[in-house]
Length: 349
Image (cartoon, rainbow, N blue to C red; front, side, top):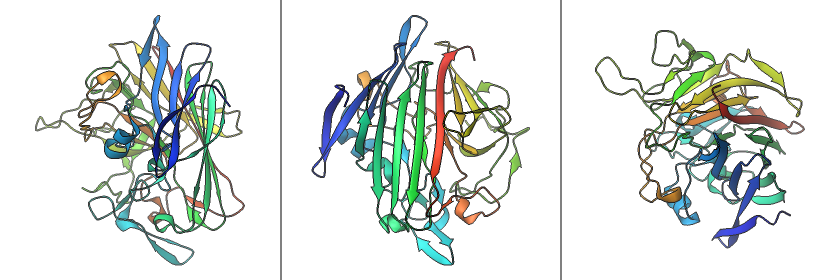
Protein backbone atom coordinates (compact mmCIF):
# COMPACT_ATOMS: atom_id res chain seq x y z
CA UNK A 1 0.00 0.00 0.00
CA UNK A 2 1.35 3.44 -0.87
CA UNK A 3 2.54 5.60 2.01
CA UNK A 4 0.55 8.47 0.45
CA UNK A 5 -2.76 7.32 1.93
CA UNK A 6 -4.20 9.48 4.69
CA UNK A 7 -7.44 9.85 6.61
CA UNK A 8 -9.75 12.47 5.09
CA UNK A 9 -12.79 11.97 7.34
CA UNK A 10 -15.47 9.52 8.38
CA UNK A 11 -18.99 8.83 7.17
CA UNK A 12 -21.42 6.40 8.80
CA UNK A 13 -18.58 5.01 10.88
CA UNK A 14 -16.37 4.31 7.84
CA UNK A 15 -13.02 5.93 7.28
CA UNK A 16 -12.68 7.98 4.10
CA UNK A 17 -9.14 7.95 2.73
CA UNK A 18 -7.25 10.35 0.50
CA UNK A 19 -4.76 8.76 -1.89
CA UNK A 20 -2.09 10.95 -3.45
CA UNK A 21 -0.80 9.90 -6.87
CA UNK A 22 2.30 11.26 -8.61
CA UNK A 23 3.98 10.58 -11.91
CA UNK A 24 7.59 11.18 -12.92
CA UNK A 25 6.70 14.35 -14.84
CA UNK A 26 5.44 16.29 -11.83
CA UNK A 27 1.68 15.72 -12.04
CA UNK A 28 -0.21 15.04 -8.82
CA UNK A 29 -3.74 13.83 -8.12
CA UNK A 30 -5.62 13.41 -4.85
CA UNK A 31 -8.33 10.74 -4.85
CA UNK A 32 -10.97 10.15 -2.18
CA UNK A 33 -12.54 6.84 -1.24
CA UNK A 34 -15.85 8.72 -0.95
CA UNK A 35 -17.56 8.80 -4.34
CA UNK A 36 -14.26 7.76 -6.00
CA UNK A 37 -13.71 11.52 -6.16
CA UNK A 38 -10.78 13.22 -7.87
CA UNK A 39 -10.37 15.95 -5.27
CA UNK A 40 -7.37 17.67 -6.86
CA UNK A 41 -5.34 17.39 -10.04
CA UNK A 42 -2.25 19.46 -10.77
CA UNK A 43 -0.24 19.11 -14.00
CA UNK A 44 3.12 20.59 -15.03
CA UNK A 45 2.94 23.27 -17.70
CA UNK A 46 5.36 25.92 -18.98
CA UNK A 47 7.72 25.41 -16.06
CA UNK A 48 4.93 25.74 -13.50
CA UNK A 49 2.15 23.59 -12.07
CA UNK A 50 -1.50 24.23 -12.94
CA UNK A 51 -4.50 23.02 -10.97
CA UNK A 52 -7.14 21.82 -13.46
CA UNK A 53 -10.14 20.63 -11.39
CA UNK A 54 -12.47 22.03 -8.76
CA UNK A 55 -12.30 20.51 -5.29
CA UNK A 56 -13.36 21.04 -1.68
CA UNK A 57 -11.56 21.11 1.65
CA UNK A 58 -13.42 18.62 3.84
CA UNK A 59 -15.59 15.54 3.66
CA UNK A 60 -18.37 17.53 5.31
CA UNK A 61 -18.20 20.07 2.47
CA UNK A 62 -18.44 17.29 -0.12
CA UNK A 63 -21.45 15.72 1.57
CA UNK A 64 -23.28 19.01 2.02
CA UNK A 65 -22.33 21.05 -1.05
CA UNK A 66 -20.63 19.08 -3.84
CA UNK A 67 -22.40 18.99 -7.23
CA UNK A 68 -20.62 15.69 -8.00
CA UNK A 69 -17.17 17.38 -8.05
CA UNK A 70 -14.78 14.73 -9.42
CA UNK A 71 -17.08 11.80 -8.61
CA UNK A 72 -18.05 8.62 -10.44
CA UNK A 73 -21.76 9.01 -11.20
CA UNK A 74 -23.90 5.84 -11.22
CA UNK A 75 -25.62 3.37 -11.09
CA UNK A 76 -27.05 5.33 -14.00
CA UNK A 77 -25.30 8.62 -14.76
CA UNK A 78 -27.46 11.40 -16.17
CA UNK A 79 -31.26 11.26 -16.35
CA UNK A 80 -33.96 8.62 -16.59
CA UNK A 81 -37.37 10.06 -17.46
CA UNK A 82 -39.94 9.73 -14.66
CA UNK A 83 -37.44 7.44 -12.95
CA UNK A 84 -38.85 4.44 -14.82
CA UNK A 85 -37.49 1.81 -17.15
CA UNK A 86 -38.61 -1.65 -18.23
CA UNK A 87 -36.19 -4.57 -18.42
CA UNK A 88 -37.21 -8.07 -19.50
CA UNK A 89 -40.88 -7.17 -19.07
CA UNK A 90 -40.53 -5.77 -15.53
CA UNK A 91 -40.93 -2.04 -14.85
CA UNK A 92 -38.69 -0.51 -12.20
CA UNK A 93 -39.20 2.74 -10.30
CA UNK A 94 -36.22 4.84 -9.22
CA UNK A 95 -36.06 7.80 -6.81
CA UNK A 96 -37.23 11.09 -8.34
CA UNK A 97 -34.43 13.38 -7.17
CA UNK A 98 -34.66 15.87 -10.06
CA UNK A 99 -37.42 18.26 -9.01
CA UNK A 100 -39.56 15.29 -8.02
CA UNK A 101 -39.99 14.31 -11.67
CA UNK A 102 -36.97 12.36 -12.91
CA UNK A 103 -34.04 10.30 -11.64
CA UNK A 104 -30.56 11.80 -11.90
CA UNK A 105 -27.14 10.19 -11.27
CA UNK A 106 -28.54 7.14 -9.52
CA UNK A 107 -31.36 8.75 -7.58
CA UNK A 108 -29.73 11.12 -5.10
CA UNK A 109 -27.51 8.67 -3.19
CA UNK A 110 -25.75 7.08 -6.12
CA UNK A 111 -22.18 5.88 -6.52
CA UNK A 112 -20.79 9.43 -6.35
CA UNK A 113 -22.20 9.91 -2.84
CA UNK A 114 -21.13 6.65 -1.21
CA UNK A 115 -17.97 5.34 0.46
CA UNK A 116 -15.86 3.07 -1.74
CA UNK A 117 -13.21 0.58 -0.62
CA UNK A 118 -9.57 1.19 -1.44
CA UNK A 119 -8.36 -2.03 -3.04
CA UNK A 120 -4.86 -1.04 -4.14
CA UNK A 121 -2.59 1.99 -4.33
CA UNK A 122 0.89 2.59 -5.64
CA UNK A 123 2.84 5.71 -6.57
CA UNK A 124 0.85 6.61 -9.68
CA UNK A 125 -2.40 4.63 -9.49
CA UNK A 126 -5.14 3.42 -7.19
CA UNK A 127 -8.12 1.11 -7.49
CA UNK A 128 -11.40 1.57 -5.62
CA UNK A 129 -14.30 -0.88 -5.35
CA UNK A 130 -18.01 -0.63 -4.59
CA UNK A 131 -20.79 -3.20 -4.17
CA UNK A 132 -24.29 -1.95 -5.02
CA UNK A 133 -26.83 -4.43 -3.63
CA UNK A 134 -29.89 -5.72 -5.45
CA UNK A 135 -32.73 -3.24 -5.04
CA UNK A 136 -30.57 -0.26 -4.10
CA UNK A 137 -32.35 2.89 -5.36
CA UNK A 138 -34.79 0.55 -7.12
CA UNK A 139 -32.25 -1.01 -9.47
CA UNK A 140 -32.20 -4.80 -9.95
CA UNK A 141 -29.12 -6.94 -9.48
CA UNK A 142 -26.11 -6.80 -7.20
CA UNK A 143 -23.41 -4.91 -9.10
CA UNK A 144 -19.72 -4.95 -8.26
CA UNK A 145 -17.84 -1.93 -9.61
CA UNK A 146 -14.18 -1.00 -9.74
CA UNK A 147 -12.56 2.32 -10.62
CA UNK A 148 -8.86 2.61 -11.36
CA UNK A 149 -7.18 6.02 -11.63
CA UNK A 150 -3.72 6.31 -13.14
CA UNK A 151 -1.46 9.31 -13.71
CA UNK A 152 0.41 8.35 -16.86
CA UNK A 153 3.91 9.51 -17.70
CA UNK A 154 2.34 11.43 -20.58
CA UNK A 155 0.44 13.67 -18.13
CA UNK A 156 -2.95 12.07 -18.59
CA UNK A 157 -5.49 11.12 -15.95
CA UNK A 158 -6.65 7.68 -16.97
CA UNK A 159 -10.01 6.41 -15.69
CA UNK A 160 -10.80 2.70 -16.03
CA UNK A 161 -14.24 1.53 -14.92
CA UNK A 162 -15.44 -2.06 -14.81
CA UNK A 163 -18.45 -3.88 -13.37
CA UNK A 164 -20.38 -7.12 -13.39
CA UNK A 165 -23.79 -8.16 -12.08
CA UNK A 166 -25.58 -11.25 -10.80
CA UNK A 167 -28.92 -10.29 -12.45
CA UNK A 168 -29.88 -8.23 -15.50
CA UNK A 169 -29.65 -4.51 -14.80
CA UNK A 170 -28.79 -1.22 -16.47
CA UNK A 171 -25.48 0.57 -15.97
CA UNK A 172 -24.12 3.90 -17.18
CA UNK A 173 -21.07 5.30 -15.39
CA UNK A 174 -19.20 8.53 -15.95
CA UNK A 175 -16.40 10.56 -14.44
CA UNK A 176 -17.68 13.96 -13.34
CA UNK A 177 -14.75 16.32 -12.75
CA UNK A 178 -15.26 20.04 -13.29
CA UNK A 179 -12.28 21.30 -15.30
CA UNK A 180 -10.76 24.77 -15.32
CA UNK A 181 -7.42 25.08 -17.10
CA UNK A 182 -6.32 28.53 -15.90
CA UNK A 183 -7.80 29.07 -12.44
CA UNK A 184 -10.05 31.92 -13.61
CA UNK A 185 -13.46 32.68 -12.17
CA UNK A 186 -15.19 30.84 -15.03
CA UNK A 187 -14.46 28.76 -18.11
CA UNK A 188 -16.63 30.68 -20.59
CA UNK A 189 -13.62 31.94 -22.55
CA UNK A 190 -12.02 28.51 -22.73
CA UNK A 191 -12.03 27.07 -26.24
CA UNK A 192 -13.94 23.84 -26.79
CA UNK A 193 -14.08 21.41 -29.69
CA UNK A 194 -16.38 18.35 -29.65
CA UNK A 195 -16.09 15.67 -32.31
CA UNK A 196 -19.81 15.32 -32.91
CA UNK A 197 -22.06 16.10 -35.85
CA UNK A 198 -25.30 15.43 -33.95
CA UNK A 199 -26.71 15.85 -30.45
CA UNK A 200 -29.83 14.63 -28.65
CA UNK A 201 -32.43 17.44 -28.32
CA UNK A 202 -34.04 17.69 -24.89
CA UNK A 203 -37.13 19.18 -23.28
CA UNK A 204 -37.12 21.75 -20.47
CA UNK A 205 -36.26 18.98 -17.98
CA UNK A 206 -33.25 17.93 -20.10
CA UNK A 207 -34.94 14.67 -21.12
CA UNK A 208 -34.16 13.63 -24.73
CA UNK A 209 -37.08 13.53 -27.15
CA UNK A 210 -35.52 10.54 -28.95
CA UNK A 211 -34.36 12.37 -32.05
CA UNK A 212 -30.89 13.24 -33.28
CA UNK A 213 -30.32 16.80 -34.49
CA UNK A 214 -27.43 18.17 -36.57
CA UNK A 215 -25.26 20.65 -34.69
CA UNK A 216 -24.57 22.68 -37.84
CA UNK A 217 -25.90 26.22 -37.58
CA UNK A 218 -26.84 25.84 -33.90
CA UNK A 219 -25.29 26.85 -30.56
CA UNK A 220 -24.18 23.20 -30.28
CA UNK A 221 -21.72 23.42 -33.15
CA UNK A 222 -18.31 22.76 -31.60
CA UNK A 223 -16.93 20.90 -34.62
CA UNK A 224 -14.17 23.50 -34.77
CA UNK A 225 -12.75 25.07 -31.61
CA UNK A 226 -14.63 28.10 -30.29
CA UNK A 227 -15.25 29.79 -26.94
CA UNK A 228 -17.82 28.16 -24.68
CA UNK A 229 -19.44 31.55 -24.16
CA UNK A 230 -22.36 31.90 -26.59
CA UNK A 231 -25.14 34.50 -26.64
CA UNK A 232 -28.55 33.90 -28.20
CA UNK A 233 -30.35 36.25 -30.53
CA UNK A 234 -31.81 38.09 -27.54
CA UNK A 235 -28.37 38.62 -26.06
CA UNK A 236 -28.92 36.14 -23.24
CA UNK A 237 -26.13 33.67 -22.57
CA UNK A 238 -26.78 30.16 -23.82
CA UNK A 239 -26.00 27.42 -21.31
CA UNK A 240 -24.98 23.82 -21.92
CA UNK A 241 -26.04 20.58 -20.27
CA UNK A 242 -26.45 18.45 -23.37
CA UNK A 243 -25.45 15.12 -24.85
CA UNK A 244 -23.40 14.83 -28.04
CA UNK A 245 -23.17 11.61 -30.08
CA UNK A 246 -19.50 11.19 -30.95
CA UNK A 247 -18.24 10.65 -34.48
CA UNK A 248 -15.46 8.34 -33.24
CA UNK A 249 -13.52 8.72 -36.46
CA UNK A 250 -10.20 9.52 -34.76
CA UNK A 251 -9.57 6.24 -32.98
CA UNK A 252 -6.78 4.18 -31.49
CA UNK A 253 -6.42 0.80 -29.84
CA UNK A 254 -5.99 1.00 -26.09
CA UNK A 255 -3.84 -1.29 -23.95
CA UNK A 256 -7.07 -2.54 -22.34
CA UNK A 257 -8.16 -4.02 -25.66
CA UNK A 258 -10.88 -1.42 -26.09
CA UNK A 259 -10.89 1.15 -28.86
CA UNK A 260 -10.81 4.73 -27.64
CA UNK A 261 -11.62 7.79 -29.73
CA UNK A 262 -10.94 11.50 -29.50
CA UNK A 263 -14.08 13.11 -28.06
CA UNK A 264 -13.20 16.71 -27.26
CA UNK A 265 -10.45 19.28 -26.74
CA UNK A 266 -10.60 22.01 -24.11
CA UNK A 267 -8.02 24.82 -24.12
CA UNK A 268 -7.23 28.05 -22.29
CA UNK A 269 -5.51 30.89 -24.11
CA UNK A 270 -4.73 32.44 -20.72
CA UNK A 271 -2.61 29.54 -19.49
CA UNK A 272 -1.77 27.97 -22.84
CA UNK A 273 -2.84 24.60 -21.45
CA UNK A 274 -5.07 22.17 -23.31
CA UNK A 275 -6.83 18.90 -22.50
CA UNK A 276 -7.89 16.18 -24.91
CA UNK A 277 -10.60 13.70 -23.92
CA UNK A 278 -10.28 10.18 -25.35
CA UNK A 279 -12.87 7.55 -24.50
CA UNK A 280 -14.41 4.20 -25.31
CA UNK A 281 -17.92 5.64 -24.75
CA UNK A 282 -20.38 6.56 -27.55
CA UNK A 283 -21.48 9.95 -26.18
CA UNK A 284 -20.25 13.00 -24.30
CA UNK A 285 -22.34 15.10 -21.94
CA UNK A 286 -21.15 18.72 -21.91
CA UNK A 287 -22.16 20.67 -18.80
CA UNK A 288 -20.78 24.19 -18.49
CA UNK A 289 -21.48 24.35 -14.76
CA UNK A 290 -23.98 27.18 -15.01
CA UNK A 291 -25.76 26.01 -11.83
CA UNK A 292 -22.62 25.92 -9.67
CA UNK A 293 -22.96 28.05 -6.54
CA UNK A 294 -20.91 26.54 -3.73
CA UNK A 295 -21.29 28.45 -0.44
CA UNK A 296 -17.97 27.27 1.05
CA UNK A 297 -14.41 27.95 -0.14
CA UNK A 298 -12.80 25.50 -2.50
CA UNK A 299 -9.13 24.57 -2.88
CA UNK A 300 -6.79 27.39 -1.85
CA UNK A 301 -9.82 29.44 -0.84
CA UNK A 302 -11.28 29.65 -4.36
CA UNK A 303 -14.93 30.63 -4.70
CA UNK A 304 -16.91 28.50 -7.12
CA UNK A 305 -19.77 30.30 -8.82
CA UNK A 306 -21.58 29.85 -12.11
CA UNK A 307 -19.44 28.12 -14.74
CA UNK A 308 -16.40 27.87 -12.47
CA UNK A 309 -15.67 24.58 -14.25
CA UNK A 310 -16.89 22.49 -17.17
CA UNK A 311 -17.78 18.79 -17.10
CA UNK A 312 -16.91 16.65 -20.12
CA UNK A 313 -18.59 13.35 -19.24
CA UNK A 314 -18.08 10.28 -21.46
CA UNK A 315 -21.14 8.05 -21.14
CA UNK A 316 -24.22 6.71 -22.89
CA UNK A 317 -27.11 8.95 -23.84
CA UNK A 318 -29.47 10.11 -21.08
CA UNK A 319 -32.68 8.08 -20.77
CA UNK A 320 -31.30 5.47 -23.17
CA UNK A 321 -33.10 2.59 -21.34
CA UNK A 322 -36.28 4.16 -22.72
CA UNK A 323 -34.81 4.88 -26.16
CA UNK A 324 -34.12 1.47 -27.72
CA UNK A 325 -32.74 2.93 -30.96
CA UNK A 326 -29.73 4.31 -29.05
CA UNK A 327 -26.79 2.20 -27.83
CA UNK A 328 -27.97 -0.04 -24.99
CA UNK A 329 -26.97 0.01 -21.33
CA UNK A 330 -28.22 -3.42 -20.21
CA UNK A 331 -25.66 -5.48 -18.31
CA UNK A 332 -26.33 -9.20 -17.86
CA UNK A 333 -24.70 -11.93 -15.77
CA UNK A 334 -21.53 -13.19 -17.38
CA UNK A 335 -20.89 -9.87 -19.14
CA UNK A 336 -18.21 -7.39 -18.09
CA UNK A 337 -18.86 -3.65 -18.28
CA UNK A 338 -15.76 -1.68 -19.19
CA UNK A 339 -15.02 1.95 -19.87
CA UNK A 340 -11.70 3.69 -20.47
CA UNK A 341 -11.34 7.47 -20.58
CA UNK A 342 -8.18 9.54 -20.65
CA UNK A 343 -7.91 13.27 -19.97
CA UNK A 344 -4.63 14.20 -21.69
CA UNK A 345 -2.93 17.49 -20.83
CA UNK A 346 -0.52 19.41 -23.02
CA UNK A 347 0.11 22.60 -24.95
CA UNK A 348 -1.43 23.86 -28.18
CA UNK A 349 -3.43 20.76 -29.06
